[in-house]
Length: 143
Image 1 (tube, rainbow, N blue to C red):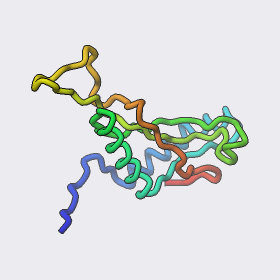
Image 2 (image 1 turned 180 degrees about the horizontal axis):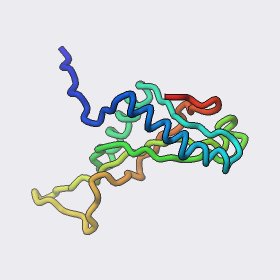
Image 3 (image 1 turned 60 degrees about the vertical axis):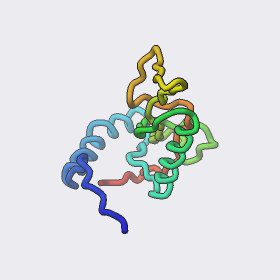
């Protein structure tokens, strides 16, 4: 029997979500559109299956390569103006990368520490980022 998950502490109201998106459209998207001379993407969608698969992948690969994966960082990016990206060329995207830190290794029962202290949420550059969600592009999506 599955237990019900705890309520996330980062939840916001739909009204605040609408305000955030409206602010983006008003203060960022309009400036970007004037600069690039076209309407840019304003949302990115990944399926639950894609996200769950990526989480499983980064946890497994992190474990195999000596990392404790503790999160995912979302980066903004822009596709190159290249035909191979078709209708996404020149548009904004989000890509995801695993974060965490290298595990402490103990060979003698005493933990060894790296000389450089790693941040708890550093990007793990040995694990591939994930991209290619569906972008909300012209016509823009409205939250």
